[in-house]
Amino acid sequence: MLLILNVTRSLGVAKKSYDTTISLTSQQIEPQDQISNSRHNAITRAVAMASPTVVGINVTSVKTYYRRSPVFNDPFFRQFFGDEAFQKKVQSLGSGFIVSADGYIITNQHVVENALEIIVTREGGRQYVAEKIGEDVTSDVALLKIDGNGLPYARLGNSDDVIIGEWVIALGNPFGLFDISTKPTVTVGVISAVDQDFGRRVDRIFEDMIQTDAAINGGNSGGPLVNGLGEVIGMNAWIISGSETMSASIGLGFAIPINRVRRIFKDLMNYGRVDRSFWTGIHYDVVTPNIARYLGLKTTRGAIVSETDKNSPAEKAGMEVGDVIVAINGRDINNFNDITTIIDNLDLKAGDVLEFRIYRPRRFLNIRVKLAPLQDKYNGKG
Image (tube, rainbow, N blue to C red; front, side, top):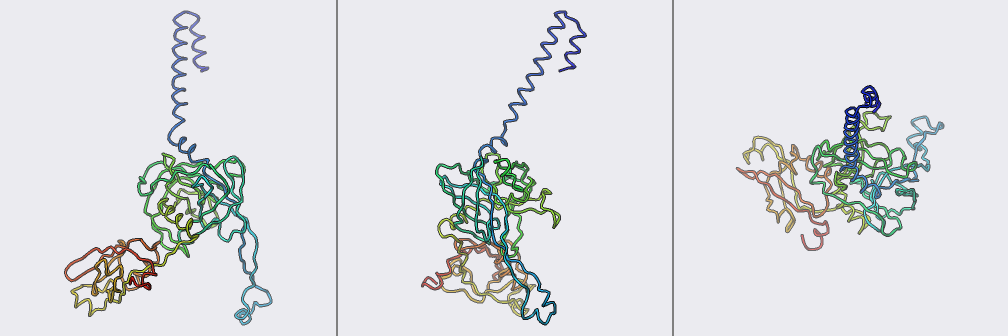
């Protein structure tokens, strides 16, 4: 604008110079209006929709620590007395999001593990004491409840409809900043990948994870990952930081798909836990070289079905004795033990479907087995 004024002054006060100044000034205002309007885009609208549903979570919990007694440094005494255990109260923080008008909140199980007290902070700074309704270690999902009516709640999307490359927004409470600003922190990125399988990590199973480069830091766990429509498509769970001593984002964040969270939520709401006992009715054994030759197989990979329980899911699906299982849900079975390993690394429960790739002499078949409740095996249905 100074440049325009200087130019104008150098042209004198002729009408032609005056008209030029007006023309230049009007051209400068119009782009500003366009920029101002463009600031209100899909991202800002999605943030405005999701932000009131996000909460900060402060947890007081008890952790057990171990210290070695100097009296028992001798290995001989340590085998009898071991290390001294002691418990200590610790403070931790995380994020969550409201999923019902009456105050149900979803977060990560690891955020509220062993919690003695859970304090939830809503946008605006109002705090509540939260009750833990249920938790599921395997899926890393927990359900909390605060008192309230008419609360803003998140709109849940469809994580099966996620598009690689689409814009996403991570909202939460990184490093406890929610307590300072009384609003969730917002970071923006894209969907980097989907269906990322990490299998079992200690007691938790991470499969079909959504990967994003939106910055996710310590305290973001349990917060929502939102698409451009303001819909929650995932729950931020963890990051790869590249360092054991740093928890800052390097663009490798992972979220639990909201479709799985929704399924777990229903069980936690109804039962406070998730029942993962199920029944297939399949008995299997090693494929020996003799069995492989008899069946015309060139390899001993896989596991042979030795028996199927009567009226079991496997029998109803058409599985037969002598079938050789070569893959489950697209994962190859190289040896007998792989079946247990693969199933242990899947987040399964009654009602889910396993797809078996089997070899039956001279042909391969795909057989879908719907898992039945374990009690069906004992209550006359099996």
